[in-house]
Length: 315
Image (cartoon, rainbow, N blue to C red; front, side, top):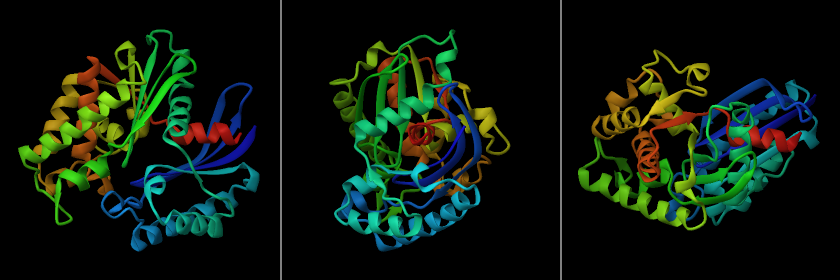
């Protein structure tokens, strides 16, 4: 077993996984997995820069993660920090890179969308390949804060594409006025989000054969939150959500509910993380649009995603 630490820093959240991995057997023993909403991508779509307060929140989380990594005795060469959409887009990403390096002792890798897709596919499907009842090819859809990754493959990636639609980016661009999210959004605002999503799906379809997918696998917080709501869970339960199969009708119902409810109503949902209350409507709409585009009757929800893919690469 090789002990590793993987950190995934996205537009909305930063996550840590400490695990023992055995590449020979494919076994991954989770020692610590956690997530912190830092909203690193706050305002990036508009300003092109990482906000000082967003950087401060992210560095605070990194300090906590550094203590956890040290406590588990992970060697420095087995720590991998991957940064995605927000830090790719920012003019001042050098400030972010230096801050992370000072705290964790490793340089964050600002990866491309294609690399992000590869990690997501590996993390999501390593277990699923043992399920013979699931038809291939898989379409793995990772709905992040700033971007969404589409990956088609059987046991390995065949094609991938990252497009700039995510729950935070779409919320800030279309569902907020003067920085305040509409409560609830208007039909015109929702239509504007939908238009951007459809254009992004057209772009993804140019290089990824979406129509060939036989099993849709959904990743990340928007998808797992939709699943938790659809399942009616009294609290967030990753074991109940992992590998659950949520129907198109359930996704449609949850999406409509999220887009027509107030902030207070969404915040009162037991499985809702406070950091997702304002962005879940846009995230759910991305998932719904994907299902409609490929005619999926259900989505297989995975709690294992890019973070697990990063861990395997570190091992």
